[in-house]
Length: 120
Image 1 (cartoon, rainbow, N blue to C red):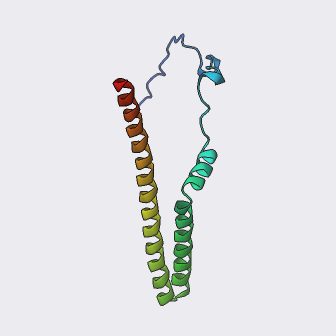
Image 2 (image 1 turned 45 degrees about the horizontal axis):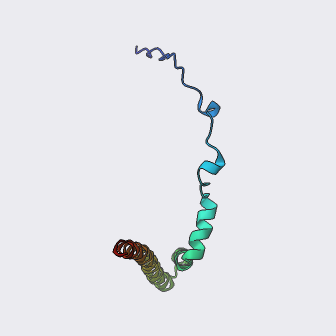
């Protein structure tokens, strides 16, 4: 027979998290919600969600064809799915590279401004 250990009791004087004062809204920017981020990313990178939906369509159609016993159609849909996934990955890499180039360009221009200011 194994008995349970007694509960741990503490005499904590820390305030409950809900009773702590929160910083004012003006002291820090409001965090972006998941929905807002999804909308922003979709408008910035429209080929990625489009590719994901296309991939899902090929997958669904391929699985339905497989269940229906249409082997050739199922194989064609799975090939289409692989192609759609490849296009989606290439689009993601392209957007990532473009984003990296934009940031690099900003850093270079900032460095150039510093050098120009030092020359004066």
